[in-house]
Amino acid sequence: MTARLQVIAPGPLTTVQDQGRPGYGATGVSASGAADRASLAAANRLVGNRPGAAGLETTMGGLTVRAHDPVAVAVTGPGVAIDVDGTPVGSHCRIHLRAGQVLAVSAPSAGLRNYVAVRGGIVRIEREAASGAREVFGSELGSLSSDYLSGLGQPPVSADDQLLASAAQAPLPAADLIPHRAPEHGSTVVLPIVWGPRDDWFTPDARRLLVTQAWTVSQDVDRVGVRVGGAEPLARARGGELASEPMVTGALQVPADGQPVVFLADHPVTGGYPVIAVVRASALGAAAQLRPGDDVRFSG
Amino acid sequence: MLVEFTETDSGETDSAVSPQVLPFIHAAAAARDRPSGIIEVVPAARTVLIGFDPSVTSAEAVRAWCRAVADHPEPAGARGSADPRAQITIPVVYDGPDLADVAEATGMTMDDIIAAHTGQDWQVAFTGFAPGFGYLIGGDPRLRVPRRATPRTAVPAGSVGLAGGFSGVYPRSSPGGWQIIGHTTARLWRPDRDPPALLRPGVTVRFVVDDGRAAESGQAR
Image (cartoon, rainbow over all chains, first blue to last red; front, side, top):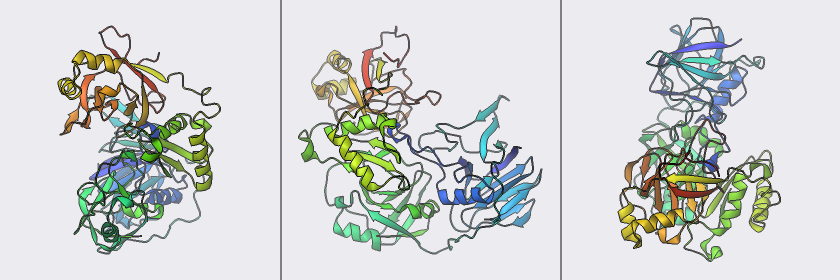
């Protein structure tokens, strides 16, 4: 049996995200998908879905949805207050919604993005257009993910959208909650890096600064990347322009002003600024949870 | 894994794309000729990104495959698997706002520019900032012009431009610094088409003057 949920309020930005569209880089399409893949996978695990099944990615909470049918859901990401019909329930555990119940996800006290998995996985979004016609959004290139940069996939979720989950494929797991490490408000996030491919474009001083200086997350945070700022910009050891080259998620690209940008899921496929280092895959989820004002350090 | 071709290897330092990248352009187009575990091959001007799944294959195996591709530019079966739509004709109305600037920069007349742009086959070397945007190489070398000093904040979809030895067509309205010489009604990106991108690495493109009689834009030939 399938389940339907109705969006009552989407908060600042809620998108449908899954495992994305890997393999289309040569046509100019980035993988996109959940910015914090591990958190989406954890939410899916709790409701018996495959790791990359489509769920909702919230940005600073504010999401409320009403279940039309009984359905199991789970919310992961940074620790966050959640309630069902106004009664507090837990994050990182399975929640059984009865028909008509309303789930509300608030803003996390630290971190940025929460993930709501729906048993069966979201397979379709229906929206009533101004004309009264019903628009149906399915997958594009094998994914439902909203890609902010290319405009592929679904537009962000809006009030009154209907989310359809498919019939569940697997039994519910025995575990109905999973442990998580909550980012502490006010603590410094440490992101491990590997150097290169263009660390030789920077002065020895710049390479030292990258891993010793305190960096602060700027206001420029979206699904494309996170711009960080430091007291001293990273200076180049050589002039000239880099021939455009392919980019990866986690790349620390350094524009002319010397303040790096950490690329996230919707990064451009190619770029013309040198990449001094790349955030390790294990820390991409933490990078995706950075929010303006957070303190960051990079460890080499 | 990022594979780089140094300029000293190429011998042709003024070319827009390193010649060594070209075999990988074929590899990017021919997904089924790749060993399992290689998720994607993304060619750029002097580098190629090989995305692979380390649970399926190893960095050593990927390195060995890269060497084999570099040493054997036409892998067995590559011709047989060539995409029948790999040759594309794009009709262009040559009315771009930068035609006069391009004429001044190249010392050519506008008619010369149109003749040069339509007179040779171009090839998609790699793709870039937007789905469906192909960097075209192999055109008339006289058309090598710099980017505009100040990029435009919005270049309309279908704009045909030149920059640094490349030609390209904007798939959708976006900021851009290329010199715009014309426009086309060809649709560079259609999600309902498989593959959605008209221009993919390895595809050959011929621009023709749109005299208003072209039956269909962006048709295969």
